[in-house]
Amino acid sequence: MEGFEERLSHTLAGLKQVFRSRKTRGIDWRVAQLRGLLKFIAENEDGIFEALKEDLGKHSVEAYRDEIGIVKKSADHALLHIKKWMAPKKGQLPLLLFPSRAEVLPEPLGIVLIFGSWNFPISLTLDPLIGAISAGNTVVIKPSELAPACSSLLCRTIPYYLDSEAIKIIEGGCDVAEQLLQLQWDKIFFTGSPRVGRIVMSAAAKHLTPVTLELGGKCPVILDSYSGSDFKVAVKRIAGGKWGPCAGQACIGIDYVLVQHNFAPLLVESLKHCIKRFYGESVKSLQSICRIVNKFHFDRVRKLLEEPGVAASIFYGGSLDEENLMIEPTILLDPPLDAQIMTEEIFGPLLPIVTLDAIEESIDFINARPKPLAIYAFTKNKKLKDRILQETSSGSVTFNDAMIQFICDSLPFGGVGQSGFGRYHGKYSFDTFSHEKAVLHRSFFPELEPRYPPWNDFKLEF
Ligand code: NAD
Image (cartoon, rainbow, N blue to C red; front, side, top):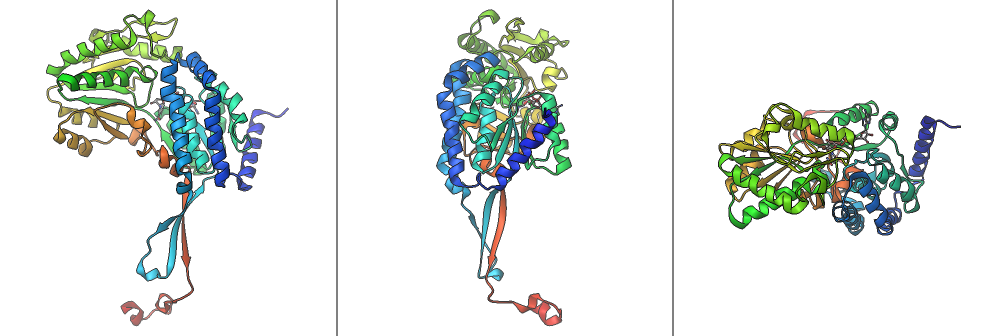
């Protein structure tokens, strides 16, 4: 019987052969795969809902919005634009090269490895895949082992819809990931923690494989002092952005809020009312909110609350239901800044509110920490907006909303510094999985002799 390692190298050899056969390069193949993905989504909606419920307790409405809807949108967008994306782009040339023609020709990279993540186990696995197949690559996907129902659904079902010679799904945990990383890929696309991001990058360095690292970090909200209906909208958007997508287990989820002292009491009261309206009043009867993915992460979030000084800062919530892995949406007011809740990515339903003397101080506060994946700023103050854009660095900045930048195909999605590098979504996904080949077409006439030796002063003047 063949061992796992041997099976892996056979899989890779098979994919190489398929890639060399050039079948993945044609537009027909790419379109067929994108349509196959849409068919998979359409025919397996109930199965996807069930798997997401099993893995994360995700409600079908949330599952549709954050998983199924995302994949449909991205595949539709790719189908609409793929012809244009694949076309060579004309390049400008210096007069010296006249008459010539320059073009930039996108070519697929080859065999790519995609690591999916568990918090959005359908969309964050299939969204990068859309980029990889649009660009004409053969692909190995490793879904996250922490969302086993979704991983198994993808592994069992996708082969019926996509070209199973060119697109393979390999399930497994850390050990399988480690073995995959030993192999030589043409690109690795990783979604996960900075810790494993480093492991991926050092494995890739051995083969000089390019990587895209979609990592995490602490995404702040800067909340200017609002009043009236704008304030009500801001509070709903903060609550929806914090506890809505996967109960705060989201890379671009809100980690903490920066606000002026005098404004904090109104904010925490309003957030409390919003929580009760959206999710219910007790940890035993929470609704419309995901559970924590597993016991390990439940304990990790619990420990954040147990650190000295943190419990005393809980303004609302803080109850845990270990049996059902539920943690109540929790608001903390000014927890100690050196506690882990303020130094580590929370990745759960806890929301620290940090008060400042003046909202402008938020810029120094953010700059004193690793560059976030996203900054959210609720303000109408043009000067403050400009300062945030000019003086901070982050993967993205969204004014007056949270999370929704993810659905904009025209915007690159990705981090900077510790929050990762590389970008995807829309055309950026296609580019991420393509090589832009520079092509120069020359004519034989005219021939400029001064370019050739022997050198003399006359040629210098020329
Ligand atoms: P993780 O880094 O622990 O695991 C991700 C993957 O790495 C898993 O598939 C796992 O099999 C593999 N892995 C784990 N240990 C490994 C090892 N020692 N060697 C090789 N592979 C290994 O990530 P996680 O905890 O599952 O996810 C949470 C993190 O992901 C957070 O930091 C979050 O911000 C980030 N994230 C980022 C995005 C984004 O788009 N930027 C999206 C979702 C999550």
